[in-house]
Image (tube, rainbow, N blue to C red; front, side):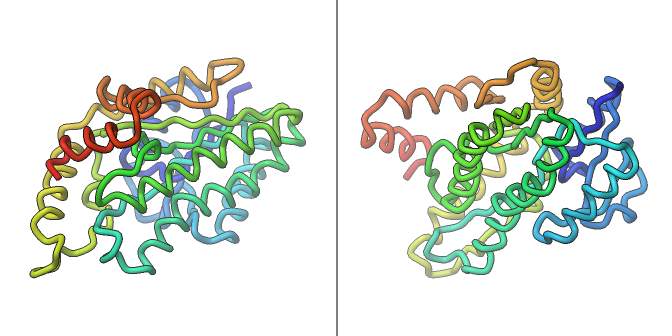
Length: 267
C-alpha cells in the first residue's frame, strides 16, 4: 500500500521540492496552498489550506481522508520568515508569524492525530530551522517561533508514543528558495538607531538564501526519515558550519558564543 503524505505549504520552495521528490518515489502526495486552484503547473495534487484557520485545516484533512482512507505522513512545512529589530516589528506581524509557524502546525497535528491513532501508525515531520536553536540578531521572532516548534515536538513525541505515532523535527539551514521574497521585512526606518546595521543584516540574509543549498537535499533527507523505522527526535540539514554552530552553542560559554555570532554578523 502506497503511503499517503500531506505537505503543508507544498506549492513552492522546500515543500514543492519535497512533494515532487516523494511523488517520483511512488508515494501518494498532497500539497497545500491557500489558493490551490490558482496554481496550474504543480506536479503534485494541491488542496486548499490556510494553517491560520482551524476550519480550513479540518476541511483539508477530512477531504484527504475521504479520498484516500488514511494519512500516513504529515509534513508541517508551511511557514513564513520575518526580520527586523524587535523594537520596530509591528505586533500584528509578530502574531501572524506565530499563527503560521507555531499555532498552525499545532492545530494541524491536533486535527490529524485522531486519524493516526485509529490507524495505530503515523509520522509527523515538523520543518523547523537551524535558526530555531539560537537567538539571531534581527531574526528574534523567526528564531523563537521555530524554537518553540522544536520543543513542542519533543513534548508531543512522548505524549503520543504509545499510539504508534512518530514525531520528529527537521531543521534546515539556508536553502536557495524564494523565501526572502515572501518574508516580512520590518522597514528600514530612516534616522532609526538601527538603520545602518539592520540594512547591512538584510543584505547579508538575502545573500545567504540566494547562495543556499539545493532544496533537493531536504527532499532526500525527508525521504530517508520516512523510510526509517524509528526516527530520531532532531535532524539538521544544511551546510557543515550551520550545523556545527549548534554544537558550538552547546559546548561554549554563553558570552563566548554570543561574541562569535556578533563577529559573524559584523555587530
